[in-house]
Length: 520
Image (cartoon, rainbow, N blue to C red; front, side, top):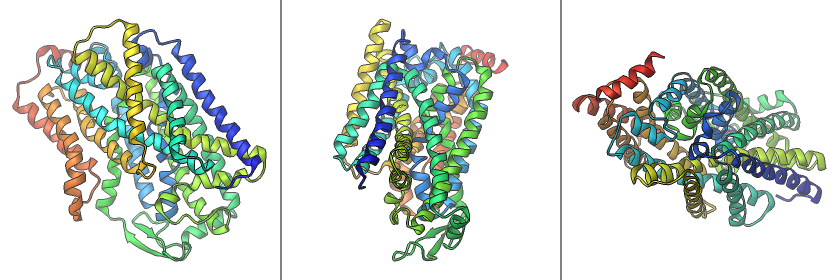
């Protein structure tokens, strides 16, 4: 993108201010980390607003500001709308039935501060195999997930400033590593709060500026209606290869595909970085307020993101931005809109920098939480819990930070290829956590008969089936061509039930704790 000196200066000022702000929050939060529990769970002191917004910011990633608008721009609203519905329902149900119970049960389970530790303590697993397997699952799926975040930041800087991708990616990674390693969970949560606000402001600015540049709302709607299937929920738009604004054709978006897309919502029950927010709130009675804030924000943010895709299409037709003819390029629609805004002078360029910071925020808010969860699996769950290494609190925090740094370096190497597919990795990792952890979280909280054998079988089955379905079954096509999360989730749940029933019932000590948690 060719930016004028004024435009470039304004964008740089806004983005540098944002990055320095994130590092400052990390430094301030670092002063509050006195124990490893503070580093990984913030001492369970999060307020309802921070809990809600940090959870959703860590969830959305760059998919919100790039993936959804890009899909709506090129293929119509069917896939993004059904995906958004699945995610919105999953968000609400997760807050409704899991949040309060997990907060309470994690305390009853010997004050567990990580998800693997909760599983192990919940089932009194003296072998610590639950800890080891769940920690390995987190590392397996979170390191490439984090790498996708680093890659997204690198691509943003590289495409905007025409700089080397590797340099841009490393700079972004250093900032994320810096504030997360110094401030831990509190830094990640408070930066996520700020980032969610920046993401919201970015969406609102793009919405109104885009409508103006597209010639008004009526012009946006008229343009979308002129394209076959663009506004349909049962058909996808297939653009004409020679003319983006010709009517084009459609492909069916049938019942099986809709169900498969809605299955994205199942992933929420197994997302460690979201579940940790439930465990960290100071007052469980405030979770109701958090649920309302989170649910409303998610619905509005995803709805606006989809509409922006249609607005971007209208801007392309009006000549305000170029034509984005491939799926990869269409995901840059908000970047193109911000670039257009920056051409109107220094102050608009500052606002454009804020929008671009919003894209960066959506990526960083996810990457920091993933880094923290993955590092806790190595330092706390494997190093301390499984191998029984005894260290003081200050030494444990140093081990935690060292683990985080090692994971981040590995993620940087995985993100080294600029042509890597960010969203394919995100989709796969989301399915992995949803299937390996989601059913177990639900059965751990709500089925008294669940035992450690069923828990282990469920995790292994869910995690393994993600790979099997993705790379062996799904390529067969037909009715088997569905998102791997759905079948893997169902098979994991079945494994938990079957194995728990054919193996000895849990000990009285375990069921007594379950009953006590259930009574409150």
